[in-house]
Image (tube, rainbow, N blue to C red; front, side, top):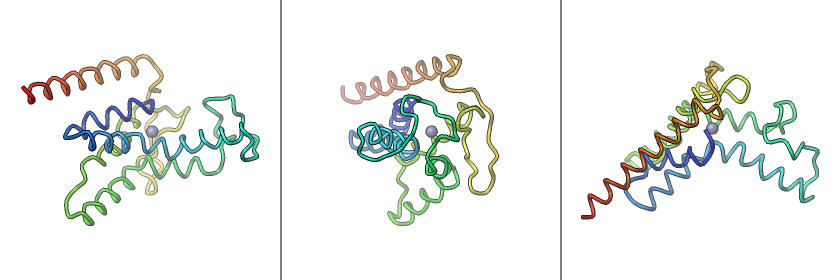
Length: 169
Ligand SMILES: [Zn+2]
């Protein structure tokens, strides 16, 4: 899914308690793509402005895997693995002595990505590093996926604002 939808799903499901927790869940919702494609995006900007040297094809939005810098695939594996997510979730639980539910937005990001990425573009390595099993899903750019995504988000936020308003009256 696109990064904004990921953020909105994360905060819609896990960040309803307060403004602060909304943005915390939003952050965890976009984090997997921020720390993989986001870094690539800033790398490209730096190349474009001559801050660092490089020959990445700056104009292409979806580059071929072979033309990607070395760090993109490992970062994508790390941020899109349910196993890594669960380890971090339980470590934070152990440290705080209570779960940080907002981090669930990270897990939700991975669950949404599993069926909405095809083999053509970063299928989700959700069992990394134990297995490279992945699902050949339907790309989220396909209207069959993207339009229901928008409708479900609208319903989620409609319910979110309705229940908030009801609570306040
Ligand atoms: Zn993702």
